[in-house]
Image 1 (cartoon, rainbow, N blue to C red):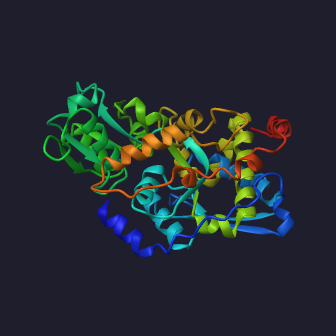
Image 2 (cartoon, rainbow, N blue to C red):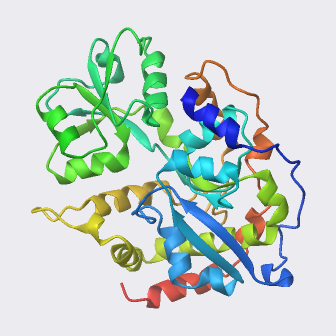
Length: 359
């Protein structure tokens, strides 16, 4: 984590004071056609939970708002954060743990639209392990995807909450991100538990491995992903960001009204993820099913809204895993200036179009 933060510090430029802009009803077309380079935190560009962005692109919502969006695949959340801070991307959707580490490391990051809520990383054990809670992990061997993986911060926080020293009272072993190496390590009992991203777990489940989820309930209300940018981009491209927010809200509304159509969009974009096993189960469908519990907003009329208290708890949790952390302004990080515009669209029209769209 320290190496990652050091790299971010070198790449970051001096933070700019955020400039205000009208985020209400002003159309992005007023200033001419806009553009956004949006970094997607995966090599496959669209995973089975990112249907809000995909549908908006597929259905032409961004285009109709005068916005050209270039979706750029990245090497993951850490890479996406680095590219946003370096100015190589206007915005991106890195996981909140990576965003939180950078923010608490003193970097200029802004969340203009909370896309999903819920645990990205979890703690899992084989169903026959006899381990039923985090407290049972004292003295155990716990696998992680890699030594610097985003799950490590959450694993350490979960262990400390049970008074377990993550350095001296457990053994943490890198075992990969859900592939054959991971499967072998779990099935041959090289590890007693596995902490990783849910996406890695779906691959193991599709391979027939039965796992119990020990993830603390507290983590399941944390922010998961958003439209992450910098105060510099907020000042320079307000019309583009508000169009991006509205288009994404419209895509989310469409998919909530027609799941099957959006599953088909995802299958076209990433067919490998939807290859089913002998039981008809695919990694893509497992992830899509989970996303239906994480993406829908608490208030249907406020898509993209932030939860200040859960975000504060989340950042406090991240801070407990760091030797030191920088102060941050929650009101600056959780930017709300585009949310009114984002939600000012004809929901009935979008849902009617979704009802007529072939599934």
